[in-house]
Structure formats: structure tokens, C-alpha cells
Length: 214
Image 1: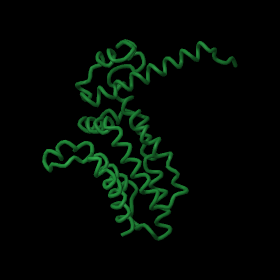
Image 2: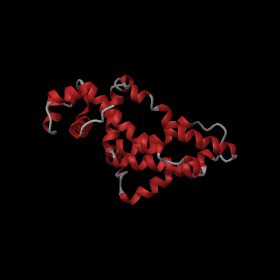
Image 3: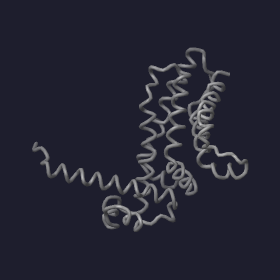
Image 4: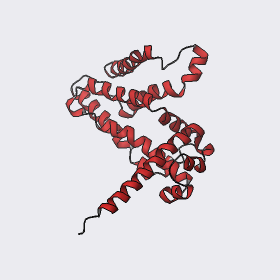
């Protein structure tokens, strides 16, 4: 079998870079303006490509939006997979996964906006993605192993459900970003105040461990 030439490899790298550039710009466009308000023309203007080329790579606006969602969800799943749950004590592993989600969501506000937007559309686009349909198990695998080990050691409650724990982690981390401005307007407190960050990060872990060990 003939190895690809250096020129072929370079062309492939160019394609990969172009696709990544389009996805980066499209992420900001969809996060800022929503699926309905985003314009492929504007995405093309802000990249080194054309509208026609975007359609060549992705097929259309909806397919581009789905690719953006896939990229965003795959990033957090990849980070979760890096946590070595096999060699952590159950309590420490739960805290590590919670802190990872806390840090990721705070560093990626576009992800929170995309999730909020997709919920407005009742997840109709996510439902069409075969990639995202396969991410349920990876999201829960680490949690499931930690809960099983904690139960086996008599340290975690018997009825602890991994999806419930995932929901609590996600709820806390998403709320800080998604409701930041309304919360500040009503209560006069910025949930992203750096002075409270460590407190909130630790509080999430404490809530989880207190529940699991009750």
C-alpha cells in the first residue's frame, strides 16, 4: 500500500485546520445568536473560507450546528475520561469529577449557552446526532464505578444513582453560568465572584459527599 505523499498530508492538514477554524467561529456565532439568529454568511466572513466551502464541509446550517454541539459535548466527555477513577478513593473521585465539571463550565461559557439554546429547541438537533446519542454511557461510566466501590466499602448509600449524581453536578455548574446575570440583578451577588469561587467549588463536593454518605 502506497503511503500518502507529503503534499497529500499537507492538504489534509489544511482541511483539518479549515474545519476546526469554522467550528471555532461557528461556536461563538451560535452561542451568541442562537440557532435561528446565527448566519452562515457571517461565519464565512469571520473565517478564511466561503459560505460554499462551509456547505462543502458540513452540508448546511443545521449540520454545522450539530457539529458544533458534538464538538462541545465531546470535549467535556474527553476530560471526564481522563480522570483515573480506578486509583482514587470513592470520595476523592466524586470530588474530582465535580471539580472538573465546575472548572470546565466556568472556562467554557459558550458551552452553557449552547446547551440552553438547544433546550429551547427541545433537543431536536441533538436527537439527530448519532455521535451525541452515544455519549450517555461515557458520561456515567466513571460515576458508576465510583458509586459501586463506595457502596461495596459500606461508605456510600445503597440507593445512590449515577444519573442523579450527574444531574446534581451539572445543575450546580450550569446554574452559576446560565443564571449569573438574573441572580445578580435580584440578589446583588455575582455567582462568578472570584472571591467565592473556591467556596462554591468546595461546597459542590461537600453536598455530594454529604448526600452519598448519609
